[in-house]
Image 1 (cartoon, rainbow, N blue to C red):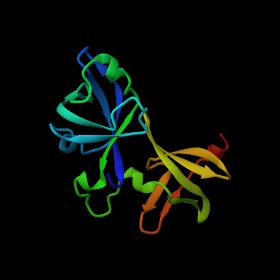
Image 2: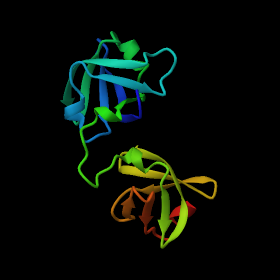
Image 3: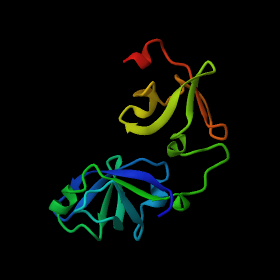
Length: 171
């Protein structure tokens, strides 16, 4: 699979038959989670399958309830808790002009008032919203990815411009 893009994390097992509850990390869940879709396991343990094939998928209380071929009981489902699943970038729906994936932010420089603060090492999906993990002076710092702090994103220039409250990077 070329350029895997994380689309969900396995939150927990559901029922005794091996069902899984997924927390979607994409706006395209409806298009991606359907019978026959193969999801690649990212960073899985050696005792779990490298990919999962959806037998069924449906929305369930703000999450997704899926059944997969490779998991037949609750014990096997429990081994997948917290695991990220991905599809290849080519499998994602086309983006509108100017749109980007959060994964596209990784590696971009973060600037404030024209000064480089650091580079985005990761984008974390947190309950309050995405957080940019920015490498600043050899340490990772978290910056909320929201309109209050992120002024602009220029993928072509490789830059994210921010306006941060005093002391945010000192925490």
